[in-house]
Image (cartoon, rainbow, N blue to C red; front, side, top):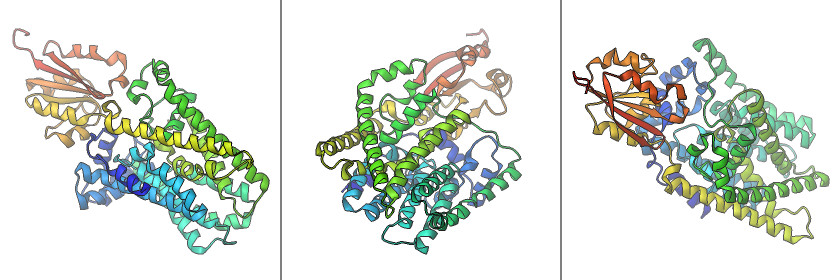
Length: 500
């Protein structure tokens, strides 16, 4: 039943939300007539980090050739990957620790707000979730205590999964390093460890070929930083919250963009208090179980200790990158933490660190059930609360089509996302026209009116804000300002000879 509900949730209303800016960039990269053309575009990129994840654009390009480019067709690919991740993590839990363990994993994974959100986005994160889950599933097979030596098929499967993971995102290399390092630290059997991980390392290193070719073709790569940026501790809490209950838990992300983000968070203090209580109990139980398992020193099955240790190490590595390397790590980059959480969570209720205290186990069960309930709250926000939806490019396109005599001008946002819904061509002033002044003295000289579109206006610096529209005078005057979800839209008409 949990599997059916989980798959259904990943397809539920998946075409109702607008295609937003990042998804528009995905469409732009995969809008070619062949996968080879898509590969060429990816290799020539210099101003983004898409070269780190070529697998999804290539697969999506082929998918679009077969199934078309409707919203349902585009999002169904991610929904399928998300469903495969769900099935894979349940099967891995069942084969490793049995039916009860798999049932707890199934309930949490099926109702995970984090997984469902990214399973409905035209982005590579659902694919990345599946490939990292495959790595864990094959690793658990390699370390099956019922087999003293890892089978060849399990080792080959791990190597294939590792290769798929790094080709989905270079950040998967961090996940593989964390898992392999903790495995060596816990198991201590170097020769067996080498037998398991050497093929995986060799297969994953094939991604270096893509990196080398990319640098040869592109010549240079400029690191771009995007997404939600926040102080270090707030970002750590944001990643923890997102992995546990999804990005639609608590306040809408748009409300966290201002300088009053702390006050906004305090308004949701009761929700965060419940989440903090749940996570504190779960983390305490996992650490206690891991410590008791370590003291018992049962070398026959090291898998749970490896997964717990890998979770801690990988999370620390992400935070270190955020703090030291000036690379903005967001929850979508930390997807490898999700299958680790799904597989270790049942240990809090099924294993005991102190068998004589049954009330501890009951508290742990309550904490896990509370976490699942908070995921349901996150899903309610995502599916039924408009303020938690993605950027509303669809409404912007409808507004443009309603005023067809006005030329749409994009100041900030994705022209591809607008043109997906509208048959009008969008003039992007970030391209040949660097500002509105250049535009009105160029092609706009013959226009009767224009619509200026600003996506995510909180990202536009104050000094180039609304006062920049003064450059449109006296040729144009403002007749309407409209606020849509994540948008400001300004409609200007040309002044007549009398300046009216």
